[in-house]
Image (cartoon, rainbow, N blue to C red; front, side, top):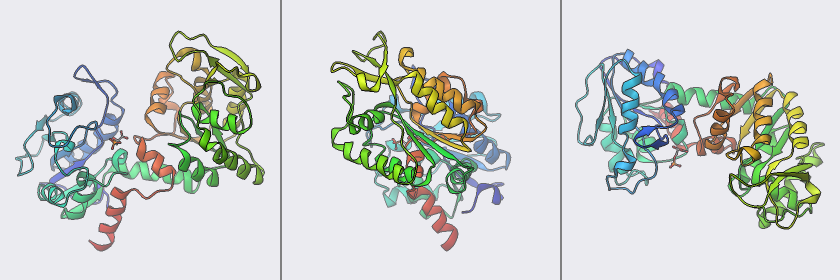
Length: 391
Ligand code: 3PG
């Protein structure tokens, strides 16, 4: 694909699609990781002398309805604190917008437009007409074929990849295509069903797959142990069993936790009990891997050449059920492996344990990161490749 740095942007109208979908509380950005990741792209376009427009979605508002709760104004406020040039919000931009050099115009939430989600051609053409160059930089939204990610790239005079998108594809591509071995993946989170294709796809490329969180409960049940009242998916036990058998057939394994931390209720004040995986009571809920398991998994991470991490291994929001995730987070932080992490909960855990600067690469993608791991083609990247080939 063509990348932004290949082009001379001076004086051109440049429309950049970023993923500025960040959590907002009381009118303020509460976690700015995605904004910090997008900032250098915006700064580079300004420095190149472009007339810079930025667009993004925020949340999932109803199309065709303005809703202040989903306004990008707090993001514009943040940009004004971090850019050397002024940023302003444009609410009415589809029929043309005045933009000068040395300023940044941010379009109001792109999902307020009817047709965005279904990748409407007319909307995509309007967006394309606003710019000389379209820059796709929103890795976090690259798995969506929508008017502002895919359609606009189809119709813009020039469509290219931004530096953040390029860096994401490069880092994730390297980690999976040509990894330093052993390649160890940790997949946590609550449900096997949402990660089944990730587990299947990773299990074919990794040397060691580690599962935790609610996902592990289904594996525990598949091994014939009681899981009490824990969240697990009975209908996916057979699939979990198959994944384990396939790993074992290759001389490996997907290790079960030998011990777990349980509680009687899902609450910040629930009492934590550590017990062997064989002793889960009928009224127990498994909320974390136990300390022996955490040590065993940490040892596997110590020996890794590459680590891919998606999903916490316990309910780390509650400290008494966060030890497993903390121990693994620290093992990743201290390992010499090339480590990549992605996903909303994973980033929250990285923040909580203060290890962000010890992870080799933190992806801005949630769903997009998962789809990349699944080996799926990202439609917003595919269209850039198509444009690079056929113009
Ligand atoms: C995300 O947060 O994963 C991206 O911004 C995409 O958001 P969406 O799932 O609402 O399309």
